[in-house]
Length: 227
Image 1 (cartoon, rainbow, N blue to C red):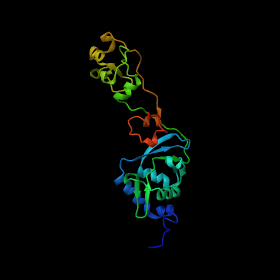
Image 2 (tube, helix red, strand yellow):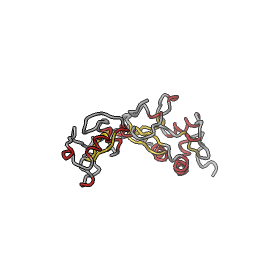
Image 3 (cartoon, rainbow, N blue to C red):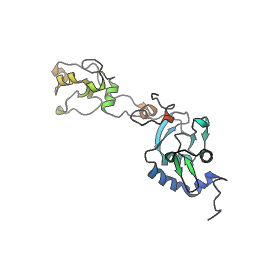
Image 4 (cartoon, helix red, strand yellow):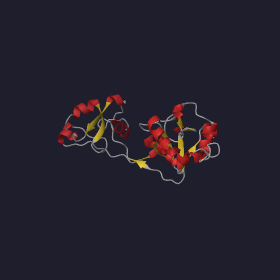
């Protein structure tokens, strides 16, 4: 009904809250399934990476504000301010935009939570790469450091004897030492571990997010990643 809601020029935030949110959710899923937004706590520490739908839910419910791009001097925007900024600075590419009939809204890169100051940690995922990283790319039998292509993973207790895929039973081994040990216990092969394998400590979210994640350039100042 014409005139039932304020125009986007008068109050863009009210327009969104009046009925466009569900449209945003649908478009976010269908047109931007891979796009992610970095979420910071109120101490400006990275705590999560969410999809576009979740990011806009946080914004619409006033749980978070957008950290503006460089050209805005990283100003903080609530939902109304972000809609106004989007109208005044329309994105150049559709992949950066969420659209309704009336509005083209910029998809933020980074947002900051209003009332959350904790720093979550995560378990390190067990993988070849994480075992190599824990052991500093060093063979745990001969003590020499190698390039990743020259390394393999050894089961201290062989799988044939019930050895499991656990942090405490997997070690980095050069291919020569791995072949020498074969399906034996270390002492049976006349070998000894340089140190006892252990589960690595939980790491802050920001550190774990930087591993195995496609990092947006806008995230780099908030995550411990190389340039």
